[in-house]
Length: 246
Length: 258
Image 1 (cartoon, rainbow over the protein chains, first blue to last red):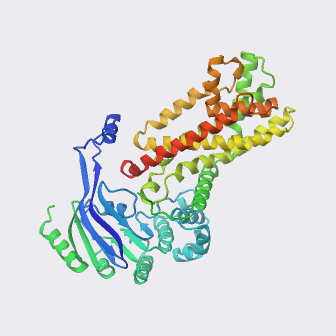
Image 2: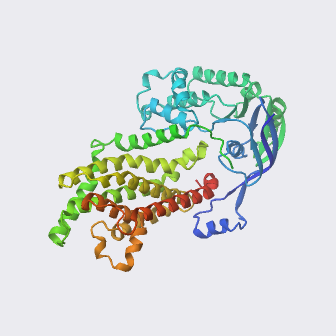
Image 3: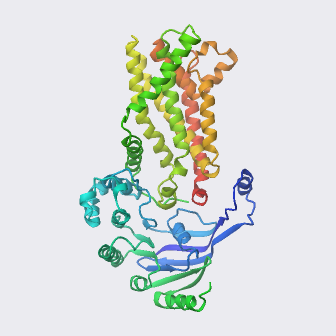
C-alpha cells in the first residue's frame, strides 16, 4: 500500500521583501502571480510504500523541511497533489507547544493532547513517557528550570511514544547526552522494525545508511535522485566534494 | 485539505483552557483577585463620576453600572486575547497539525473562568443591594452562553485576519474603546433617541447588558416587548457561523504567513 504520494508537487513562498502592505494581500487574493515568489519545491514526484524507511538529504534550503511540512499537512501544496494514508507523528521541532511556566507533568499532558492522544491513552502512557525520559526528579518543576537537553528529552519521549504509523524525524536525533542519544536511536529502530513507515532528515550519513533503505536527494527544490541510500549518499557526498565552492 | 489530526477534541480543549488559565495566574501574587479588582475599581470610579461630578437620576448606580461592566470586561479581554491567539501560537500552528479552530476558541473559553468569578461578584452585589433571587435568573445561563458564542464568532474571524494583517489587533483594540461609549454601560436605553434603539437591541453586547439589567436590577423578564433574547440569539448565531466560515476560508495559508 502506498502511504505517501507526491504528484507534480510544487510549493511557492513569497519572498518577504520588506513590508507587506494591503496591496500585496489584495493581489494575492485576486490570484495575481507574484514575480517575487520563491519555489521551495518544484515538480516533485515520489511514492512511499507501507513499511519503507526513507531518508531525505540535501543542502540547507534545498526544501527538506518544506517537504516534511507537506507530508504532515501543515501546509498545502501550491500545485500538485499530496496523498497521505495513516497517522503521522512528526518530530519536526521538539518541544513545539511546550510552555515554560508549566511543569513537566503538565507539559506532558498538554503535548499528548496536542499530538492526538486521548485522555485514556495519555494517562496510560504517562509512566512510560516519564520512564523513557528519566526525569522523575524534575517532573513537577516548571519547564523553564530545565536545561535544554532535559527539555528535548521530555519532548522526544512524548512524541516517540505516540505509536505512529508514519514517523517523521527532522534533524532531532541530537538529543541529550551520548547515552540518551543511543536510547533514542534504538527506539527509532524499534519503531522501524515494527514495520512502520519512517521519513528521516539528517546530516548523519552512517545513521541514515543503517536506518533507511532508500533516500531522496533534494537540490534547490528539485528531486535530483531517488534510490538506495548507499548510492544516493555516495553521489551526494561526491557532488559536495567536487563543488566545494557552492 | 483534511487534517491528519484525529485526536480527542474535548481533552485537547480542556488542556488548552487549563494552560491559559494557569499561565495567567500562576505568576501573580494576587491570583484570581485580579479578576475582581478591575470591575470593582471601574465601578467605584464611574459611580463617583456619575453621582458626584455629573449626578444622574439612576438609583443604586453601582449595581446599575456593574451589570454593564462585567459583560463588557469579558468581551474586551476575550476579543483582544482571541484575536492574537493564532499569531501568538505560531510555533504550535506551524509544527503540529492540530485543528486550527480550537486555538482561538480555547482562548475565549479560558477567559470564561475569569468571567465566572466576575459573575459571582455581580450576583453577590445584586443581593447586597437588596435585590432578591427571582425566577428570571433562569435566563442568565442562556444569556451568557449566547455572549460566549458571539465572542467565539468574532474571534474566529479576527484571529484569522490577524495572521494576514497584523494591524487587526489594533483595530480590535480601538473598536473596544469605541464600544465602551456605544454600549449602554453608564447610561440607560431610555435616554437613547428612539430611532437608534433597534440598533442597540441588535448589538449582542448591548442586548446582553440590557437583559442583565432587566433580570438583576429591575427584576423583570429580559425579553421586554421587543423579544430581546431572540434578537441576541439571532445575531450571536449569525456571527458564529460567519466567523467559522471566514476562518475555514483563511486557515489553509496560515503556515505561509506565520
